[in-house]
Image (cartoon, rainbow, N blue to C red; front, side, top):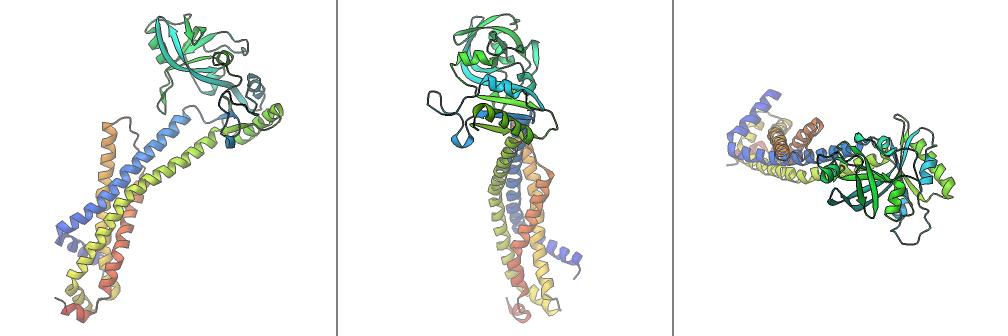
Amino acid sequence: MLWADAIRLALRAITAHRLRSFLTLLGIAVGIAAVILLTSIGEGIHQFVLAEFTQFGTNVIGIAPGKTKTGGAPPSGIPTSVRPLTLDDARALERVANATAVTPVVWGNSEVEANGRLRRTTIYGVNAAMVKVFTLRVRSGQFLPAGEDESARSFVVLGAKLKHELFGAENPLGARLRIGALQFRVIGVLEAKGQFLGVDLDDTAYVPAARALELYNREGLAEIHVSYEEGTPAEPIAEAVKTVLKARHGREDFTVTTQEDMLRTLSNILDILTAAVGALGGISLLVGGVGIVTIMTIAVAERTNEIGLLKALGAPARTILGLFLGEAVVLAALGGLAGLGLGIGIAQFASFLFPALPVHTPWSFVVLAELMAVAIGLAAGVLPARRAAGLDAVEALRAE
């Protein structure tokens, strides 16, 4: 029997029972649509999170006090043998080969008062290199001056939103404001940066790290960030950072994390989450597969006489097997195509209704989903097809 004949017979069998075939197609279509929709959302979130992290560049190394296995730095006030990171440590790291900028970081949350207005916001204690490490842009005025560490003057640079909340359309440069119990003078305003994983980067203020240590009564830095030249491998820089700090601390009581390591770990976690979400949709697809098994079993029982006639005319068992397998595969393939259209359509409609929802459907997912539908159709049709192929011609013709 030619393939064209087999396909024609399969299509004829499908169209002969339209309602039954439609319900079977619907089961596969719903399963594929669920897989496509959920994996599209998962992949969209995956790309969104990675894009959020890489907006600051991938050539950054972070150093935090304490080892990872001990959970990092201890809570404030608890005795510890971990030596805190200091401004001197940050200056020492400036001598690391291929390092382009080093910034200490201290952060906290404080009330900010200016121009008769009061609000609570995040305060970052940094140095002049912050703009280079994290590609910040100054809209007006300037960023914190270089060359000032322990003797840093009480300057502050405002994020775009904080400036608007405190000063509106007024020019804030030169104005005085209070952060906690300390007075600062505004010397700059940053360009709008947007949000990072839901955190408003524009509702912030930047002060010298030494003043932040005084403001929050801390002995050490929260972390140090080192940027290095593009194209330079991260590992040699990380090893050089460890060498410098171990020489200063006497042991490795700090944790060095490269942006590449963080992105790789994050990507692996997001891949697992995407696969897990897709697996939830796969449950619906398995239900569709069970539907094909049921329908094909009923079809074999209904067409016993037809099978007996084919065998009496000399059709080999493999032809009967191929006929019923082909019918199962065609059903699954058509259901898969309908599910792809449904899933992609729902995903795009959801993205239209909720613009903040990241949705992305790679073509590889589309092809894989259709192949999955065909594979399920093939697997679901094996048992009924083998039962049909194993029928005795005489017994099949006698069946009513």
